[in-house]
Length: 245
Image (cartoon, rainbow, N blue to C red; front, side, top):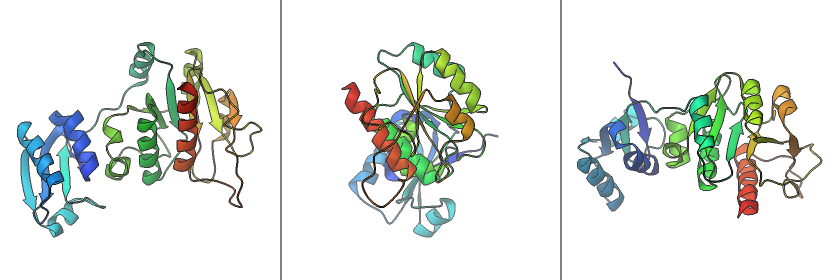
């Protein structure tokens, strides 16, 4: 029997109903809530022939951890792209590829925020390692505000080997590192590119860093020596978007 996933929060459920309605098996909502946003979701569920269930706030809290905003969906597990599927996607793009690689990011809030920024910046796919990193869970989906249902996520067992494969496909690898000599604003981000961001606190692993074609830093004027990985990711992605426009 397939184990169902919980997806909660207005934006996450709305994106799920819009993008993958067939995955949704049941929509649950807090019976005390009565507003236009919830009514719209219930109408979407009815149009897709999805059963709905009204629960008390206590029942919602018991079934769904975190800030569910009074609505949640039980759905079949999401499908992550394989490496071969990613390479097929890259071969068929009608624009210059832009990828985001997160090296051992373990905080679900950071992954969700990175996914939200990546989707907004037009990133074609996000790649994460299988081990010692957070995966796609309900918290990530909630923080991503629907982006998790739109942007492909690829999980790889051997990140270093995967980086070599990307390079063989003509993708340049840019790593973000505080000690890098070149500013992100001076680098050319217009070629086919994968932006690599390191884990919170420790940055990229040594082997990941060694595979980068070049490193960049984000200029800092204040006393703080580093940025949260999701903030740094947003800066790098939107600088790439600025240059490409």
